[in-house]
Image (cartoon, rainbow over all chains, first blue to last red):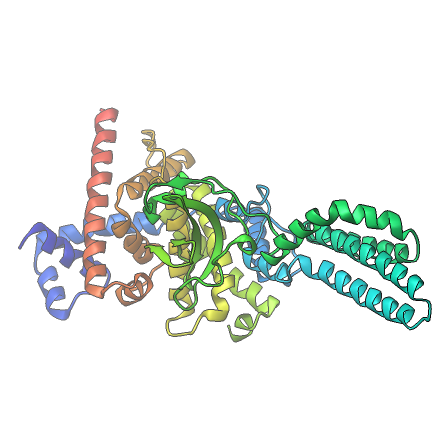
Length: 297
Length: 176
């Protein structure tokens, strides 16, 4: 019997996992008994209680986990670097990406778009009201002012769309100001609209793409990198999924979901790297091309 | 359990508290030091909370939570791109009853020895001796056959015995 086989027997005997034949074999062999005793002493050392973490750490970690549940009024607490890195959060703060995504699931441009639609509707209504008048010149003048104000309101709304969510209220206020302006200086507004229209178009184009300017690639690769090593080569923090192109189109195992991503280039073509977590909490890396087709693994 | 899966805060809190100590202990032994254990344990708790609604009950919660904790701790270590680090210290020669310093040194020695084990051996040994799982449970936790569990534990213990034995011999030589 080899050393490996002897260890296998002794170890299984120690754990109560040996068959009756194996038990009998061990118990009648003094050499095997000695080996069991040696392994038992190792096992006992391992079984010695692990020094518990401080009560403060324990409570902080439990509170952080509960904050991850999303509905407990627990204060954010310290957590491991992974979440800080993935969410780009300030060190020491818990940022649960699922909650963050849920909170931000309403597109940022939606409130601004709502303001724009309201204003547009008001303008049409106003134009129709005036159009019913017998005085055609007056009507066209009002429409001209309305159009200019309309473009201006687009500008305000589109600019607001580029701002953070908390500034949506500001956009609404600005929209209201624009509406008030409709009744006033139409000619000045027309001049302003002429200069701001290109900017408005740009902003609206951003809106169509999700309200964000394209991200610069954080790294350029000649060929598809190895997913196992790629994270070590890339900078933190990871971007939020709202800015990704493919987070909704990834081919993932059931129960898996993306946590964060980084834009890259592979051979001059755009690509994205995703960190994905499965149902068992295991993280992995997925690399996709610009058409969201998996490149690796 | 069912209430926790439905998102009941109280039930989830109770569930986490009930299992915290043993999850931390596994993370501590797998990670090899307090800092990585704390980070790994935090990730494990978050992963458990996130994964609870998807936990289908095919395995026991204990097995599943150990799997999540083990993966979280291993991910934490891999993310830092290094093996667990523990300071190898030798116990001071002295009285028969181990002093606090001696116990600390013994723990550090054990951490150092565990850190030298390949991950494939270290984790089954920890799940057996620290978590007290049987071979079938370890097999389910790690998704490997029970026969593999048996051989990895045996080989892991043998390596540990060699490392700690060498350490002891070194200590004895230093004492002489």
